[in-house]
Image (cartoon, rainbow, N blue to C red; front, side, top):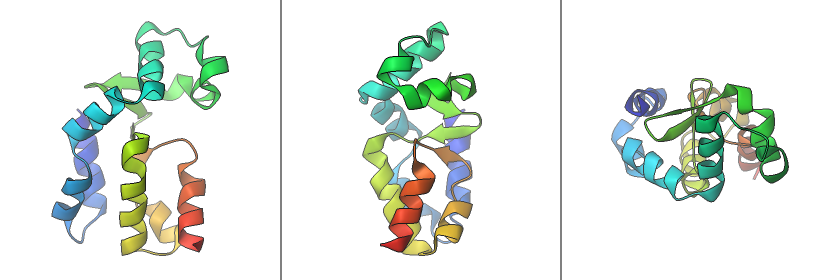
Length: 127
């Protein structure tokens, strides 16, 4: 269930869990995923198990296709919840607010994923 993945992510933020609920919850992730064309394409490919069009349209997701699955209207990369673009900056901001170092920030994102997330976290920590 999406709620479990989101709740596990909240638990990674052991300081003030309630603040993070404002950034995202299972309904917001589901709605944001539905409103993002890229993730909807990837979901469609996952549900039909047809990845051929992803090769040209979404090459990053094509390479990860074997690890992707849909659960409760959300996308997962293995056991990690894929965060839509519309929520990524809020998460990066919160991570940097709590832990400015890249190593500490990366240690807190084991339950979520998006393309190039690690690079974005390192850049945020440097900036």
